[in-house]
Length: 117
Length: 213
Image (spheres, rainbow over the protein chains, first blue to last red):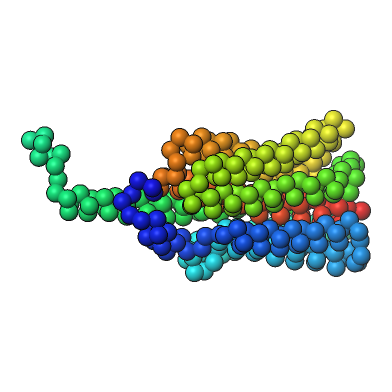
């Protein structure tokens, strides 16, 4: 990069065009703060039980999913504007994982129910 | 003959440089996208192991379950190490873009130390469990646990090796287009491992402890 015959400003402009979203200290710290908060909530509701078991399961799951979104956005800069195909392939992966997880658990639930009853 | 080849016109020289530069940029964005596709397939690999774990985790074969084996305060420290290391790797990307070699190497060093701390804690946990007779051969639950958490740990170990290699290359070559491309791939890899860890501590440790009767 430094050996190329053009100014750093020009380089910065064209680089940020190719890879739209770069982090700043501020954005990484916001991502860190949100992740730390969500992690603390997840551990707190399990270590100091304050809700019923089903509520706790929902809280841990939702807080985990939100944290995945937070880190995708603040750390991996996954937005629909930055890299369209990264975004598309991500959603394809989510779809495959949903089928894999949902399908397996559904099959095993019925298997267990039919075998044990 | 030789002389003619070595003295191209100024214009064509510039055009050639510009062309090479565009090629570099094109190849950076293609390489990073290709690496992203690899990470997506890796996510599917992890999903498969997660599902296997979810299906077998109640089968403890009369042995200890998640509730007795997992120490959540210990896991919360592991989680903190990995989360902070993800942030410090972000800082190393910022300093690398500013072509600040000393700061980049410092942040890479801190990231490595945090990652190594995480891995040491994980190995300590594994060692303790195996020593107390809760090894991977004890039950389907423990086979699943060691496979899942161990696969993540192996990824972290590869990431640590990669950070060392990266630091050596930054020291030797500075911040060329090629080095920045590798830094971008490594940053995606390292952040990805933290995202997978969110699933590990939520599903294996937290939900494991809640669901264990």
